Image 1 (tube, rainbow, N blue to C red):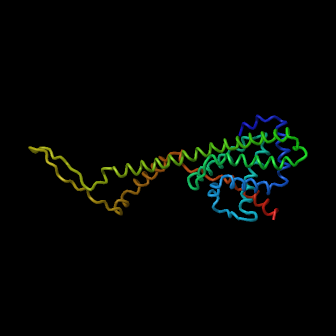
Image 2: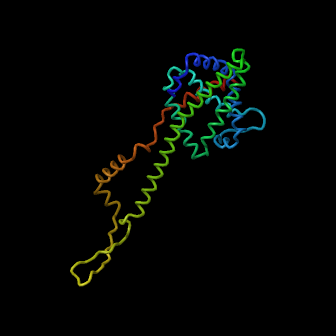
Image 3: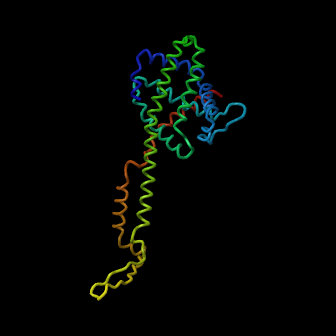
Length: 263
């Protein structure tokens, strides 16, 4: 998010001023944005199986999720002078969408729908404010918000692509392990052995002895420990699961406070 540094002091001021207006009616704006997303792109509903899509009245689940999204934007406004601090959050959001692409059918074009629906309702709310009522001022702040949303998604795509690559690498490694196991000659119960010193090369069947697992373990605990240690150390760090950082906990708390105060 370092590109946010390119905003001039005047542009940062108008963004902060616009957020003060948006914050006055944040619950409704958040709900309207996601309602429009679901109407414009109905396939996005499959990304939220926990939501109840009602024919009439507001869905509390939609509003709650919308508020979590709004807190991300609020974080952007608060860190305009230190945008790189948002990188871990954006990376985590991208990885979450990477998992959604595999489990629930998320597609990157959904981000485009999200941008347009957000800007539509931001313009609608801001146009009713006396300061942003002038078309020139309104256009200027909407252009700035478009830049913010594009930069936000650009940073999220890095985490998204990393997650996709890691998943593919994990699958490739698993396939290679299966292939090497199935083609191993040790798995055969017998093999042919050429016996030298005969007029013609004779082939005898050599049956491999059956290994008693219990006896083997008793005399080779140290070998098993060594193998386990080598196996653990040979896992590629690129495909290790990143530890949870708890970055989404504040988003849930923010949405919960807004939601409770609203009802």
